[in-house]
Length: 476
Image 1 (cartoon, rainbow, N blue to C red):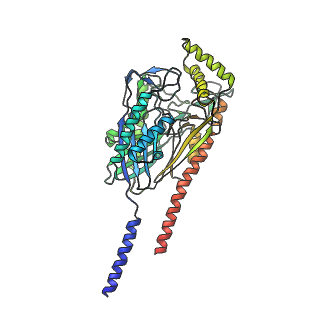
Image 2 (cartoon, rainbow, N blue to C red):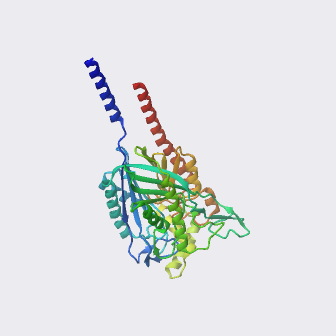
């Protein structure tokens, strides 16, 4: 009898040990923020209007969220910047990885695309890239990464999806077949908008095991250009929304990931509002903050969410300007050099064509890094372009995830990526310039690779789950 009891106890001990050994490790969550302001007097990002900053309306920030399940480490960083050149991102990412031991390709640096930050993308003939700022930014982001990892503790993740209409398609079609960015839709020759918009609002909430919030991440789709050409440093509506969220949720890191916003703007082209910059800023900020709070009130947390990550570097051909266009563009730049005050779209298109030829003329190929990330039921697919909205919707239709967000301006800057209609219609973000350089099939290739990567990481996890369930059934 005693022998049977001992054997039974030993069996229970072995089974309990096996269950404990197979139990998923506790999710580790960390987060950090850094103020990343530039000095007053520096150039403010803007394509057609060269301006220096005379005022700091609000802080520019970098906010980071670190997740680890013991196998996969992810560090997502959101910067209040227009974008970062791919070479700069690569160097910063490597330094962050070296400091934290996170695989550098598991570090995703994204930009909100505010047009109230320092000059970091060469889109203006008269404004240089602020390289001293880039060096300071690297130091800030290394510090952020170290703090996010060092602060990591057992936690859980929740998510939700809603709607906040902060973006509208900004490309108008005219009866003569041309397209333009913005315009008077009451004109008799207005033929309709070129493409769709995407009002989806996603929020992810990271908390410790007691439910105390560690960080918030939200995603929506539009151009933060409220302070374009104002000579003011500002994080735009993401900065104001961050203030609102912190008042209600605590002084925590708040990340904003922008979507497929290449042809999306805050202004409704069909029903434009009359409002000041500040009125617009507060309205949009409140809209996204309210949508995030609504999701927070309904959130359900998960202590063992699936974490997965895959990426692929896609080689894309570059469209070069026609020789006759280059001749005309160089004449315009010579006139500017001679002191003629040519600004706006004429300068933009001339410089964009010449700079495109200079950078890619000898080797017209670009590299577009594409990432697919799984956080529980949420899929994030990222790429560095200002992807047209239709492509974002196409990626979602190919995704196996219950919730999918398409993130732009991540892991570098690939410029505008228009649909074939955008290219045929021409105009800004249609014709080939340095920041609209990719071949006409680029967006469609990004859609296909994104869909493949998302299905790959979901299929792998489903196989693991099936194997685990089969093994459990066999044991019984």
